[in-house]
Image (cartoon, rainbow, N blue to C red; front, side):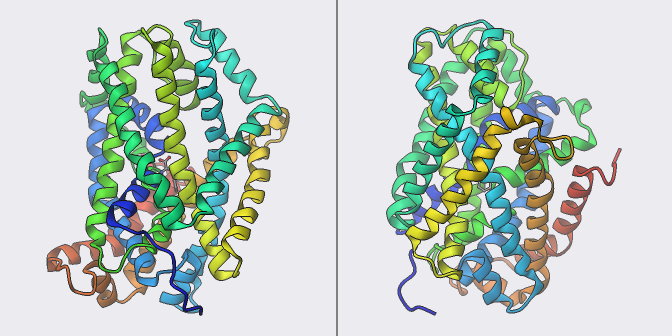
Length: 454
Ligand code: PHE
């Protein structure tokens, strides 16, 4: 083992902005508002908050324990904490799911660049929904342009990651993550001051318990995993760069609060505007690339809001994509002893290729289907419904059953320097041992349709 000092976050603030930046991403901006609206508004928010507090925060603790205790990449972490154990699959899975998610994530990142540029052009902001729809599908199904945008996005990601933790990731997220909050607040103020905005607020917050179904619970948990970047080694990797003295319970809580509040802010920034113009809320790409431009077109200084919105989408995406790339780069450089530059290059080359395939699957390769899904949707589906929950399951089993309780406590209390109430520690262990594995198994099995709850 080399004795050269391992890179790490230079400050607590640096670690926090990097973690929050990893968590806040496309999931907050285009999935959360829609899920809330479709699952009984405030009722869904309540379930989501309950899952976050009871289940996901302890899982975040678990990932922090693995990462910070081992001070290694995901593979190295499991090898160090449990030599020769089958739990090494956590490492394998983490690299596989990262490549899978980042392939399509980077394509969407490329779309956001295209739309930032478009926002500046005359004639982009029109109210004609059909025309906007056509222009989006023409762009996303084209052969060259979206692929090039994906490569630009990937290159920017690589340029940040190659700088390392302190001089790359931390340096950039220090201003990018705060920027996210500033812009979303500007958009929020614009949105809630539109005439008719209250309908949108009602849609978001009025708790209609009659709209809740079994799948609302599953949606909430799945969204929580994705949004908090859990189950794929992202938090493990970032936590491995956190100073031994830091309070990791506090850091977990801050990350969770930042991500969750950003999701709620994004909902308030988007939905009232959608309702003020009497448009039906949709999800995903069509909400952000078709519906919102239609709204910006009707606002005074609409182009300014359009630029701000696509910038926020881009920044949210890139602070997440660097965290994903770091998972693979840490593995390649520490386990396969590549230099950081070579590791970033190798990762980028693989992603350039898999991303281009995803991009083309929206167009010329659309006919190539596996289980009735094109590559983009297949990657999206398998990562969300199978790989992330499986990763989460392995993590909780690992920390709950395999690691020594005393070691877990030692790490959560930073070697006993930050005391933790006995009952709280007991509750965390109980959740990791029993509650979380059962809950995740249910989500997973119903997500892939093997069991039906209702
Ligand atoms: N949390 C990010 C989002 O909400 C996505 C992500 C998942 C990022 C896993 C890193 C790791 O969009």
